[in-house]
Image (cartoon, rainbow, N blue to C red; front, side, top):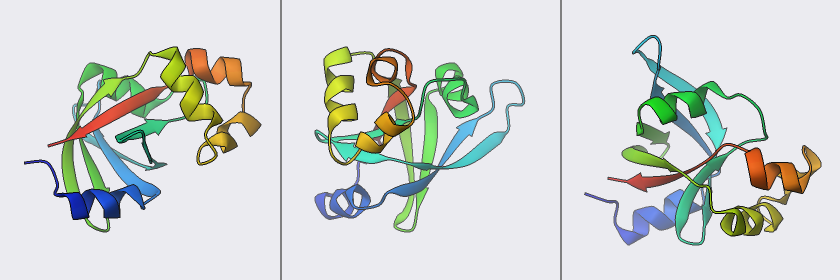
Length: 119
């Protein structure tokens, strides 16, 4: 059952979470502390362009768990390839920091980005 509206508000205010994926090679749970964003009514995890183990794990198995101080939330991850959405995200004031790490065009075209649907 998806979290209620109050929980979504709490989660939306949380920046750092633990993303737990299943290792594509090991089959074991892999945990990484990471930022997430609530943007346009979606929970988003991204990063700068380049290889990311968490992203490779998600591509192999989209079932994940988000661990927060408000509880643990099973979720299904899906990649976001819509370049208009990605451009809006990377130019938004909450996530503009990424443009100090990589060129905007590179972020829009190649940064790992997933949408999390909380169960």
